Length: 280
Image 1 (tube, rainbow, N blue to C red):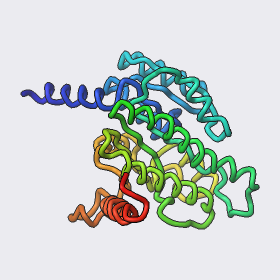
Image 2: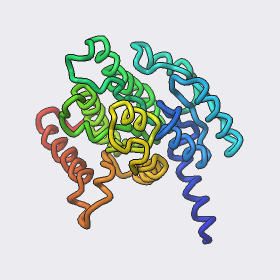
Image 3: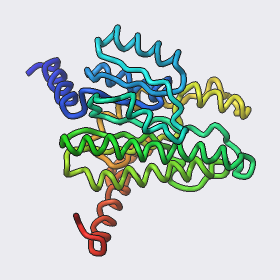
């Protein structure tokens, strides 16, 4: 079999597992847009979700022209209390085989008391309530079909508390633990779950934040590229629950990498808990 035939077979298998539609929340630029481009290249139709209508419209035209896929644009603020129900209504009967939640950057970057409770509540909805409700809805449909995937794009901030990132790290930790728990529940039922924890990535949002905070060399500092991170995430999607970038790329002993350690922890603690809460 030729390399081209092998690649075509891999693409078809990916589409069967995670198609026909992928929903990418936070798709207007950076990592989210990279997910949309790479998923469309694999033949998946795309639901693009973000606040910026103009950016989504431009990306839609690009995906349709390059890959001939169907694209639905949903301009929506995912921090609103009714975000998940509105998104479900927009998707209607489309079969979402892959749900990518990439929203949730911290717009404040302040000490805890320097932002209002209302502001933090908005971030909490964005990073916890909305992805939870979406995982419940789309995950339930995937389990009913016996196939599908969920990618929760997070941050290494989820691994512990960080000064000036109190609510960001806390809310990202919620998503991390949710994703790992869902992986443990769904992994034998045909649905893959992957937490993608990123350190830094070259996006307009990151560069703007660095400039605003007067970080030296903010415009020229080398940063990991979104396209490379997304390609790695799609490759590792069947190998959840957690991929820590770039730490899981380093070292000669895979079992000592942080993602492997979290997988072992999830399996071990799930087995221990089953003694008290049941293995169903």
